[in-house]
Image (cartoon, rainbow, N blue to C red):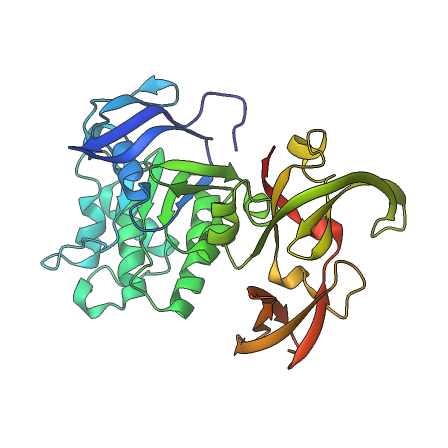
Length: 370
C-alpha cells in the first residue's frame, strides 16, 4: 500500500444535493493506493451516493473528486479507469458468462494479452474456470457475483468500486465470498472502495472504515480502532453492541495499575456518578480528553458487552437478567440495572440477579461536555 504518493482517490469538500435534500455533505476523504476502504452506515447515510460520485455516475454540487492527485470532476465514467460491481450484478441474460466478462473490455484493450485469454484468466481468478459458456441464469447468486467481479476487473482498472455486492446472498455465503473478495483484492493490489450496511462485513475485510451518518463520516479509522475506540456515541452504538452510560465527573485522580505483562504504570481515572453509582473510567486511552477532563464535566462512555464480567470486583453493578439470546459461541444477555438496559456477552449466561462490572480501562469516552 502506497502511503507516500498522492491518494489513489480523494474527495475534497464534496457535496451532492437533490433539490432540498443533501445526500452528501462537505465530504472529504482520501483513499490510499492499494487500500481496501469501506463505507458503512445506515440506509440514507450517503454511502452509495459517495460511490456514484467516485464512479462518475453523479456529479458533485460542489467540491472536487481526484484520482492520483488529478481532478476527474466532469470526466465520464468510461474515462475514469474504474471497475464497478453493482448490488444487483447487472449481468446480461442474453450473453454467456464469458461474453459478460468480455463486455468489460469494450472500452479498453485487455492487459497482457488477447480478450479470450483475459476472460479465461479472470474466470480462473474467481474460481469459475470452465464456466465461460454457461448462461448467467444457470448460476447461483454467489457465482453471479463473481462473474460481475471478473467483468469489472477485465480492463485492469486502477480502482474497483463495490456497491453492496453481497446484500442479496445468505449469511454463510456472504462470509465465504467476503474472504474471497479480500483475497482477490490483495492478490491484485487494486485500490478498492466497498459499500455495505453490514458492520461485521466492514470490519472483516477493510484496511480502513468510514462510518457514515447524514452524508458525512463520523469516524475514519482501521477496523480495530473503530470497534475499540469509537469516536462518537453514534459509532459506538452502530458498530456492534455497546453499553453507553453518561454521568458527572466528581474527581480526577491517578492510581497505580499493573498491565497484562505485569509491568506497573500510572493510570489516570475519572470518577463518574451515574445515577446513584460512582464508576471509575480510565483516561489513558483517550489522549484527546485526558488532559481536559475535570470535576463537573459530563462524560459519556461506552463498555462493550464482552468487557462486562460477572462477579467482577471493579465498577460493580447489581442487575437482573431479563432475557437471553443464544448466538452460538456466546449468549447475549439483557440486563436491567435500575431501569437501564445493559448487554452482557457470556459463554455461560447467568440468571436471576447478578453482579457485573468492568475494569476502568475497558470504558471508552465518546463525549465530554464542560
